[in-house]
Amino acid sequence: MSNSYGGGGGGGYSRTSYGAGGAEDGGGFMYGGSQGGSQSAGKGYSDESLRPVTIKQIIDAHQAYPEAPFRIDDIEVSQVTFVGMVRAISPQTTNTTFKLDDGTGMLEVKQWLDVDKQDDSKPSFALDQYVRVWGRLKSFNNNRHVGAHVIKPVTDFNEVNYHLLEATYVHLFFTKGAPGAAGGDAGGDGDSMFVDGGYGGGADGGGASEDKLRNISAKGKKFYHWLFNANGGNEGLNVHVISQGTGMSIQDVLAASEELISPGLIYTTVDDDTFAILDN
Image (cartoon, rainbow, N blue to C red; front, side, top):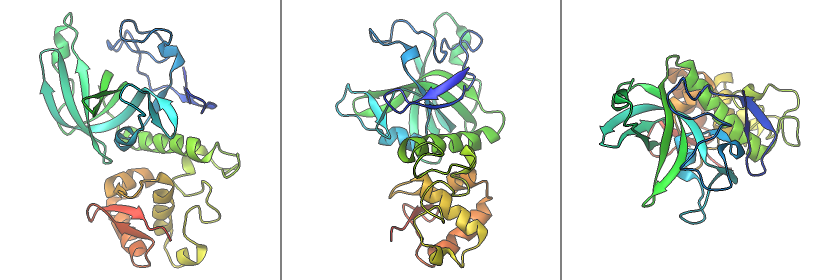
């Protein structure tokens, strides 16, 4: 089953689905299927896209007014999937609230209980375990959360890295254009573009001139290119997120950060382990 991101004019980019099946998962959710009751008239699930995101993207999503659709990269988004570590579990009478952390932020996820299924009140995962969530963006009293259709434990840590890469790729697709388009890299592989820094931005793939990167090691350049293209904003990205995105060890990321801080290419933001690009 293919999965198309866009829903609102972005169009054109398709990837494989995430396997959030309907009946076999017991979550009642299938991308491209139908969902009764909670859906507004005239717009079915088949008209919407399922987008991979980070928690920071959800927190920063634009909403013109309280009931307006959420927009990420100026594209309307309602259904999302993301991966995060379970930091808290709060069982309630009608739902279970989870606090998830993916290294870019913390977000509440609410899973409503099915009174016909006794096992719904018992999560199949524990604290400090990674899970993948499929759900819908919600806002209540100016607090954002995701109403979960399906929550599944992550059994292979590669899924954590893969999700971050795909979320970054989709972000670049909507902000910089499709591979091969103006400003893109016609010859590169989609998932390697932002890891190795080859997505737009000239020969060095980032905001620094080649002269400033001349004495930087290969790992330092990889760090810089990835961080530049990841667009972490003024808050920057945590060392763990950078490690996952670049495929580098934490030790290599920290060593590269010291190499890049010295010439003023990056700087620390909220703490000593969070870095952002220094605009020159």
